[in-house]
Length: 97
Image (tube, rainbow, N blue to C red; front, side, top):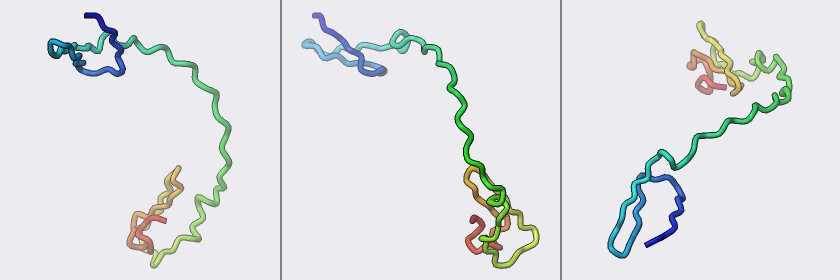
């Protein structure tokens, strides 16, 4: 019996139905695919993004604090552009604004 076999994906085993029964072919990982080729050169550096005014990092006028508490620490995280207060009980919205 002769037949053409096309590998569609790499699997652990391949079952081929024959008239006499089932024949299991073991497919080893070695020899199925060759080594990866070399990677291409790195592309050019992208353009500079727009400048962010420094006032947006220090402007806290929109922060609603119920009662300033001693020990409050405001931290700014990027790129989320989010201020977080380590003493969340002093803020109306629970610490993130």
